Image 1: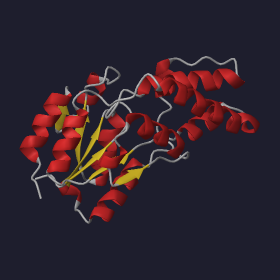
Image 2: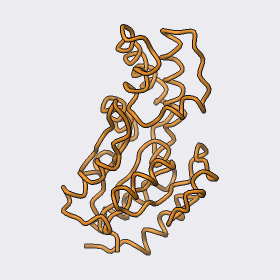
Image 3: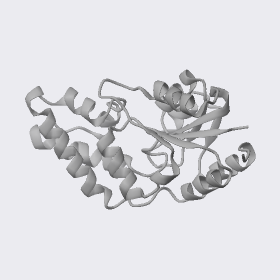
Image 4: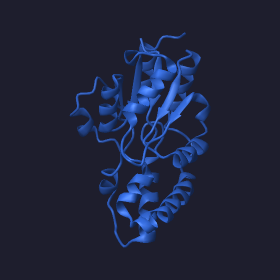
Length: 216
């Protein structure tokens, strides 16, 4: 039975990927004529926003561009002030059963803090691990959470909406649980990785938790 649940944030707990895209386009437009499609931006996901911007913007302007990103991200987040419908039910169920929860996200610390403030559910998590500008570190951060919880990998799951989340979970040795309920989720790419648990609605997620999580 599952004794710890670790979540991705964007596209898993809340519909924040469109906000990331809006902010990235605005930030890049502030320093460049370059126009990026949604798919081009998503292909850069892995490092934090700082890492993405460093790859796109001249060195002397990346800090200015990052600040523009964070301002745009905060403005756009006003349209997203709650998690996906059903996520609060899942979090309350886990809390009732005294299951520790954490977030492991590729976001940088400033944007993660903005999202947690708007979404208002930071109190559920006893650990929040953010990303690195140098690349994807989700697997190592999952291991860091497990060490803090003193749990073996087989006792925990990582819930995420992207192929990279499945790979990170497997690298860390935890069970990948695919959250395919966001409109932004690419179901074909996710299913191509043969995930052990594939859930298309938050209601399915709550039912899965009820069946697989023991209370303490």
